[in-house]
View 1 (cartoon, one colour):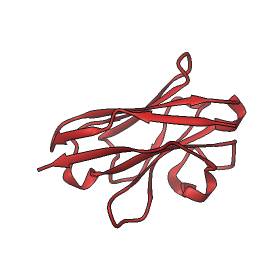
View 2: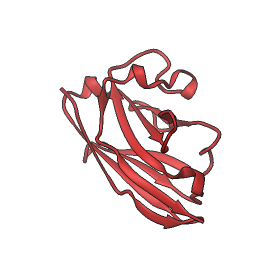
View 3: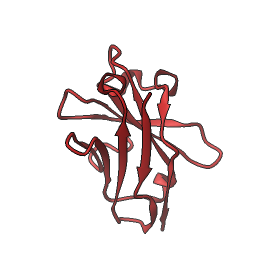
Length: 129
């Protein structure tokens, strides 16, 4: 069993920054694949970053590439999402998700919510113009 607890959301003005945290507990094999998703009001849940915990780099969708960075601290069992140059369209509830290893999980090419059985509770990010 894997538990994910997110924190770090809040309200910022456009151009500002936030760092989200996702504390992970459970079997290491159960969260070899990690991802960040977001869901705006009235919108579908969107995958924005995918990371295989064995790689140092994550993969990102175009809308956040160059602005968002995923890092992990193995000592703290925590995944981070650093968000810079935030825009109003980034306003959403952000979720981290985890899964056992599957082919392609290091890329956003197969980043769909149904591949991830473990989810955090979500944290709200609001960006004002």
